[in-house]
Amino acid sequence: MKPKSSVNRPPTPDVADNLPEREPTFQELLNIKFIETGEKERLMELLRERLVDCGWKDEMKSICRAFVKKKGRNNVTLDELIHVITPKGRASVPDSVKAELLQRIRTFLVSAAL
Image (cartoon, rainbow, N blue to C red; front, side, top):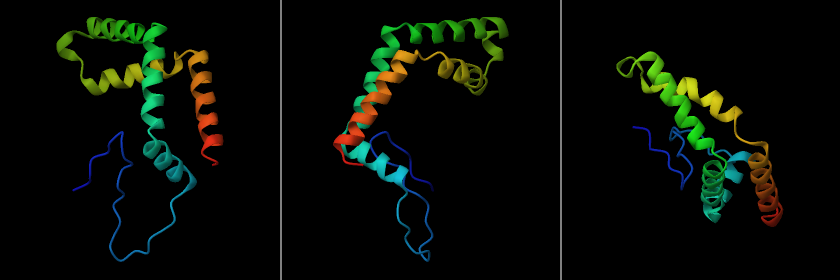
């Protein structure tokens, strides 16, 4: 059985017992550092706040409601809704929010000497 992923810890890879242990990639090391320091959770909270403040969350709700209304409540699956909303949601994150997050990540990387 595959272990569950969590926001607070990186997923545990499925590794056969007879394989030699490999060095973690730079991306894996970064992810571990973000989690261990609590920075990942702080960034996620900042993103949630900014998306609510700029109206993004309400806009996504509106798009979901319109899609469900168009297709009919009993004719929409969660997978279908995710497939429709995900690209629109990613594309509509304001540039200012992306820039703020990127700056916070850069500052963290410099302070963590990575």
